[in-house]
Every structure is written in structure tokens, then in C-alpha cells.
Image (cartoon, rainbow, N blue to C red):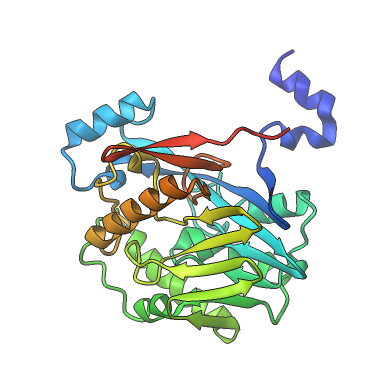
Length: 304
């Protein structure tokens, strides 16, 4: 059968030809990874401290590039007790040029999760592809007026006067990042609950500031019984396993970000914890193995 024949046969369910949600259990806690879509980025943003020929060779080995590649966008929903927690909110639809991103609201709804049921939001950091979804009018109007939004205090402070001295981002992204973060604080300032280093959002769900990528960048630990999962936000990118020292153009402190990345991967390799990250290919559920000074991504088997 041709793809269009399959689509017609499925009718209303044709949009599920490509999976966009993946559910799993961490002990007694429900976890749902949701794809917000993809957006194209220059390959140069993945290796700002590397010779272009070396970068081109790596992307060729990955059957990507040579100049652009699709950047996965993943968010996560966690249900612990009577709390439903959204971790990051994707890009939103208000930025031109990214028609395949900003998908999480309808994909949540298709997964049976009403935006009005969300009690808490964890923002790993305030880049536009993590808070942009909260700026969409139809999202904000459907969230609870008293929804709790958890973000590191250092992150909020940073975006009052962001310093991009060490970042290497294509124009006009720096200006868009500034305006998006300012708009986020303007709309949700009364809902923000800040923390310094760690905060338990719900039983078994703890957010921890790592810094590096941004001063308040944070990861989320999900723990129930003897099972653990880490939502790593932007601490990891696809190139990190082969080349953990390659720096990302969006990192506001590249040296610290490298140390955060290596420490996270070493810890995950030692513990065997499951890991999900914002920009690893969907559903990005897997584990990390250490091989000398390098690492290997071991994708989890889908449970049908």
C-alpha cells in the first residue's frame, strides 16, 4: 500500500502514522514523553570549537547535514499522586520559519491530557524552545490561573540582563531569546516559584539546577521504588556521546556546560538510570554506557 492509501484507510487516525507520544512507568509514577516537533538548525551550532571539516565529517557519518539538520524537541509530562507536571513547553507557534515545531498542545490533547489538568510546570531554562509554548494564547487560556511554574532563581535573574558573550548564535536568535524570556516573565511572573539548587515538585519528582547551558539550567529526577529517570533538558545533544567536549553555540558558559555534560553522563553510566533529553531523537528514552573517555547512547526498546 502507498502512504496515502494507508492514510485514507486510517481516516481520523492518520495523524498517528508517525508516533508523537511515548508512555512509560517509573515505579508508581506515570511518564509521557511528547514530541513538540522538529526545527532546522545550522550544523555549526553543534560544534563551535571544532574545525569545520571535522564537524562535516561527523555529520556525514550520521547521515545528516552538511549545513543543516533537524533539531528534535521533546517535552515530558509526569503524574505523581494528584499532581500533573509538564516539563518544558516547546517552541510554540509564534516564531516564523518553524512550521514543524510547536506541536505539543494538540499532541497532549490527543494523548488524553487536558492542559487544564496541569498543576505544575517545570522550566529547565528560559530559551524560546522551552517556554515558547506557554506564550501561545490558546495554551495560556487553558492552563489553570494558579498553575505553579518552577524555575531556578539564577535563571530568572540571568534573563533580566542576559550576557551572550560566550554564545555563538545565528542572528536574530539572541534578540528573540531576550524578548521571549521577557514575555514569559511578564505573563507568568505571579506564577513563578523559584528555587536555588533543588526543589521537590511532587513526591518522587525533584528539579536540580546544573548551570552551564544557562546559569539556571536544570534537570529533573523522577524516582519511584528502585526505578529512576532523568530529564536532562539541554545538558545533552546528539554529538555529546562521541564528542562530549564539543561546545554548543547556545551555551552561555561553554566550559561549565562541558563539565556538566560529562559529569551527567558519567553518573548516568554508573547508575544505569533511564534518561530523556530535550533534543535527542524522539522518544529519547535510553541509557548511557561509558567507553573510556567517550560514551555510547543505548536506546530503550519500545514497549508495544
